[in-house]
Amino acid sequence: FQQRRAFLTVVFDLIIQQELRHVDPHFLVAGQQAAQIPVKADRLLVERTAYNAVPQIERVAAESMLPAARVRALWTLSGLGRLRASVVRAAFRDAVPGVREQAVGLGAGMLGSDPALAVPLLAAADDPDARVRFCTALVLGSWNDARAVPALAAIAARDGRDRWARAAVLSGM
Image (tube, rainbow, N blue to C red; front, top):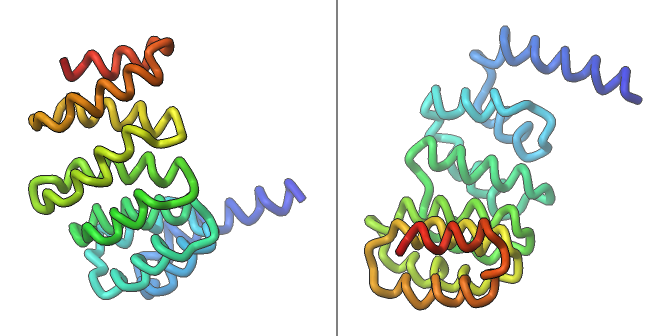
């Protein structure tokens, strides 16, 4: 099994290096969803400004069974400059903490264009996952809004024993 996997990795790397420049973006999105094509496919979608693939990429972000594919789709949309707030809001509600963690960072970057993203961002301070709360503390620490203080206080109260969480909370004070 490992030999076959190593062989497929080499084959995909060769295909990507030589052929993906000419491949239909819809194929790249399908590979992204199946997590069969390495991250280079995401990079090619962004480099090509494959705007025609945005609906498919949004579908991957919302419906893929693989959390890694959902995260890659979010970042690909961001790289294309086509990440919509509704897609980020859905990522904030994802069942997988790693996807929510990425939503925190992406949502923070969109607060200027969509202030309504503050609601799920502030709610992330009470996320059941410590990494999501940690990322939220880092983001809230650099956010110039009075609503960040109670959220940071909630994180400090819940995670104050962890030195990294303390550092993240204190970074905003």
